[in-house]
Length: 272
Image (cartoon, rainbow, N blue to C red; front, top):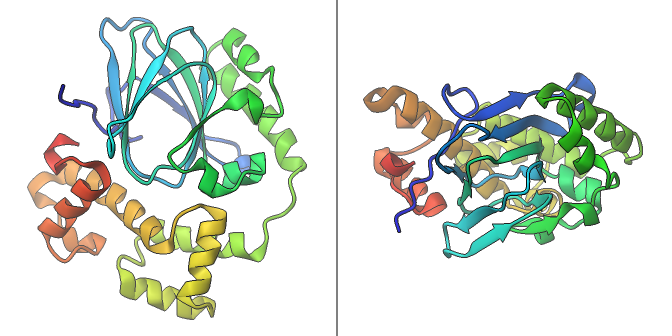
C-alpha cells in the first residue's frame, strides 16, 4: 500500500498539532513541545518525520497504539506507552488512530544523550521505553491527568528544570557543535566550501570536527548540514513553488535538491 504520509511544518495552518515553546532557562535543552489530539477525528493521521538530529520524548496519554514505518527499509513498529524516539538518518512515517492523544518533548541535538547518559550511536533510528530512562517515572501519569496542553507544558518545564540543574556543564566539543549547528540553521554555510571555512575559523581540522559531532549528536557535520539545508529548502519550496530558488540553499541545480529528497526520504518532492 502506498505511503501517503506528509511532512508537517511548525508554521503551517490546519494541522492537528498544538505547539508551545520552552522558557529561556530551557532553550538550550528543548526545541519545543507539541501534542497530537485526534479526539474528534474520524480518520487516522499520517505524519512523515524528516531526518534530523533532534530526539523526541513521546507520552501516550490515551491507550492507543501507533505505527511507525522506517521509510528506508520498510520496517514496521507497533509502539505503545512512552517512548524515546532517537535521531533519524532517514525519514519515517507514523500513523495515529482516531482518538489518539499524545504529548511530545522535542529535545535539541545531543541533549537526549546528555540527559540519559546514553551514547548517541545507541539512539540512532531507535525507539527505547522511556520509563527505563526518565528520572521521573510518574510524569506520564501526571501528563495524562493534567488539565489540558498548557498544564502539560508547565509540568514538563518543572521536571526538566530540575533535571537540568543536576547536569554537568557542556564541554568545549559540545559548544563547538552547537556553534556549527547555529551556522547551518542560518544558512551562512550552505555547501562543503562553507564547512571548510568553518573549520578554519574554529581552528579545528574536519577530522576533529567529525569526531566532535559523532560523539555529541551521532552524525557527521556533512550529514547534519545536509539535513538542516534540506528541511529549510523543502519548506521554502512548498510555500513558493516555481518561485523557489535552489541556489539560496546551496544546491547546484534543482535536480540536486530532488536527489537529496530521494536519498533522505525515498520520496519525490511532490510526495512530501
